Image 1 (spheres, helix red, strand yellow):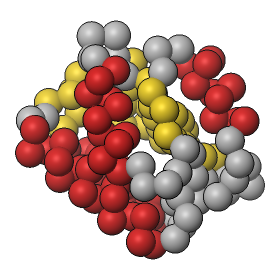
Image 2 (tube, helix red, strand yellow; image 1 turned 30 degrees about the vertical axis):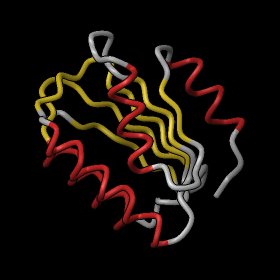
Image 3 (cartoon, helix red, strand yellow; image 1 turned 135 degrees about the horizontal axis):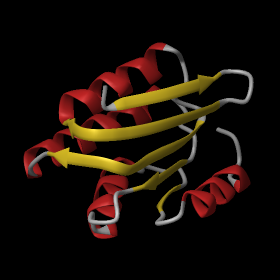
Length: 124
């Protein structure tokens, strides 16, 4: 399974690890789970260091549109993303910018730096 996650309602925190080959449907299913569990306002740590994304520009735009649409559903928590080493931070930044809409979001190379930054962000 390429997506492993924990939604901690008490801490209001979502931690996700993508592992192996990940396609758009995997990410969409994760998003549906987060929305279904009312976790959009929670801080989210997305660890893609061991993932291999299989996507094209249309997939990135579709996901960006979906993330942007979530902004109409109420407040969303801060987002920290750590891509695989062979993935450009530019691509991660592009995805973040497509779906950012007023929430703190940032790409990192270090999971420790991402976690530290994320915990410094205000709750939504």
